[in-house]
Length: 283
Length: 247
Image (cartoon, rainbow over all chains, first blue to last red; front, side, top):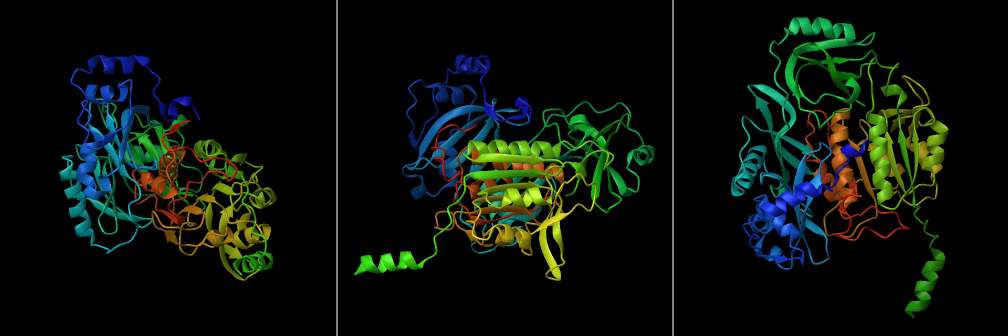
């Protein structure tokens, strides 16, 4: 694993210094007890980046009684596996356990809200009701609603309502807005992902030409199925199966098929020059 | 009156096995790489490395076996004593010739491109006759997150979910239902391990994984055990809340 792909505390004194220098607006109000932060760095970071205070978000998400005794931990700057820099705020209970985490971009856009200890089970509500709840949660936090029809899926006693991101009608797999809920509609978390895109190629090859190129690349005995789709995909490290999330998404033809033993696979070819960008497959 | 009763009960009860502080990370490289398939695959090494790294951060003494050395006998030898386990390979409900029915498990590497030998639940149960239940099992394969999977029971983990704040066993099992695509696996596990390293309980780490941007059509994570478990090694002190978040 390269060090650049590990999440870590940002050591860049330059960025911190820039943020601190810009901190002229004062600290955000804190309805919940702030942690001691003698240096004032965290508050300065929040203010500099116009970060919405976690206490305000908690006030919208948690029951009033649940807010008692919570403490906001000092904000910190983190770097995700993709290299994206975010400012993380956390709200802790009296035992020091994290109940709420909020990640924002350095320009203040809210990117992730995660709650802990949301009860499992409860009265199961319909998919339509789950979508309504997800929209209500987004609206209450004044977050943008996803476009198009959301998909509702289930995993581990949770429900996920997701709106995929599209650019000019082309999907950006992995990007978009997803809202995780309990089966009864309580908010578990929200993630909003929007990776940078590489410039679109000047000319897009036809699906037929792309399929001819793909046929030359598939292993012996493998077969392609269905119609290829365009998508903005993460190029893979060494054109393999591991996404390089730090790279801009590239416009690609996506093919699905099966290997000789029946294992499903997906192949990505650059839409402009049909260079192989990577692949994905099932276990 | 109470003391003699307790003493008698403690003498009558079998000695409880002590959980081990060793963990094993097993990953199949051969079946997923050239020349067995036509393409480059670095995901198994990535997945094994991030699992090992996170387990070490949680205080486990980790043995990592990636590639052809991950064969049937080595897998069972490794699994027999451990307290935590990570496996990345093909997985399914394979035929159990001894019992004459299907059981669940995973394929080993062993240098095989396809149809590698399997390790199935009854073999694991036999290898761990008196071991304590696994504290953490992450089975990064297809199908072993399904209700039909026999692996949780082989690890001593009941297929129940303990709610946040409730008391429960010191165990957590993570698997995937249906077919699991590797890009989705990498995204989910990256987020899951990051959350564990930051001191969150396993159930909350699972919830974080759900926000990781995998396609629901390509991955269906599932878990059983105790939401509240912080899966630190028994011999280690758990990460203090608010302590180092990314090590």
